[in-house]
Structures are given as C-alpha cells and as structure tokens.
Length: 293
Image (spheres, rainbow, N blue to C red):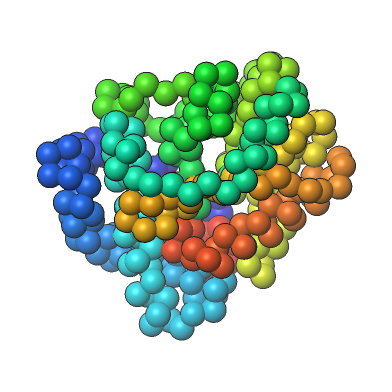
C-alpha cells in the first residue's frame, strides 16, 4: 500500500471489551489485556508488521532481531494510546498528569486574533489534544480538525456514546472543495485549524521530502495553506512518557514565506527530533516510504 487507505482497524466488540475493563477494573487491567492483543497483531497483521519492522530496521538502523522485538513494543505502545484515549474521553482525564512545552505559542496565536494552523502527525496521541486545549483558553478557543469521514459509523457512534462532550469542530474534506471555504471562515474567526501532515489519499496533491534519510510523500494541502496565509503555523505533538503521563509539545514553525517545501522540511525535521526521543510512538502502519520489498 503506497498511501494510507483511510481505514482504521477495530470492531465495536473490541472497543466495548476495553471500555468494560477500563470502567470496571481500571486502566491497568486494560493494559494487561493489551499484552496478548499486541502479540496477536505481531503475527497476524502482516502489512502493519512489515511496515513498522522496516521503520526500525531500515530507517532507524536496528538489527533484524531487535527490530522484530521492537515491533511488539510498538504495537503495545499504540494500544496504550488507544486505551488512554477511551479513558480520557469517558471522563478519566484526572487519572493522567501532563507536561506542557510551548504553551505560550498557542496563547500568542489567540492574542494576534487572526487564527492559526496546527500541524501534527500520527506520533503519540494527538487525538486527545482537544481535552487539553482548555488550558490555553477554556471558553473562546475553537478547534477545527480537518479530516475525512471514513471511520466506520458504528464505531464512531459507540465512541460518541461514552465520550464526554467535546468542543472540537470538524472540517470534512469534500470532493466539491467546500471545505476550503470552511477553513477560511474559521481563520477569519480567530480559530485554529488542525491537520495531520503525514498521510495522504490517492489523488491528493503531494510534496516530497526526506524523513529519516529517505524521501517520502506528504499531503501538500497543509503546507501550501500554511505557507501562503499570513497566520502562525505550529507543530504539535502529544507524547506518552509513562503509563499515566503525557507531554504536550507545541513549536512555532520558522520558514520562508510562501515556500511550502521549506515548511515541509521544517516539519520533517521536527518529526525526527521527536522520534529520536520517542521511537516507539511512530504509528504509521503502512508502507510510508514505498520501499518495502
């Protein structure tokens, strides 16, 4: 698979099992089950295992044996972030503690009153970001996540039923390009637009840049928009540091004006800095570099 197909693994029954253990026996009980689930995926998720093995072996330079062991830890780490997302969304936010780096960058965006663009990646647990933006501005901050609508409706409905109310808004990418007008409207209202800049769909315009020593394709939209509009651009990551501790990183991008390629380069450099410290939290389980034989 050369690019992500927009589908996430999982069935409603699996989610219900984890939610049951979280709510009745605690988060650690769900972590315990995860030891067996990660083992299953290690042997029965062929494409995902090949992709993350390649990441450890070819891009990070680990031996084949060590890379195989690290694949298991990657699956386990990914499962933990999913469990944490369910726990936090169902009202257990106070079970976790947090560090914040770059909070001032977000506050400065709001003070400028011209909106801003946040670009994250499938590293760590970006999906819980909405529950912490209230630290910056609890009442007036509006977050717009730019996404597709490919998540299975049954799963989404179930997650909605157990989640606390969220103020995050969604801008759905549409074929008629009407989402562009929604983005412009959000920025004019001093709102924040969030992108994940590391996955694209067949037919999307792409830009190419080196990541971990080899060129890869990235969706052009976020970088074209961020480089051409006169609004701040922030690279944002939420990283799991221990079983119940997260670290929020926000860094304002410094790049050449109207140069999408330079913005992308700064983005890949920021990703590399994060992965150097947290290599197990790269969660793109597909042929990201198009180099798997």
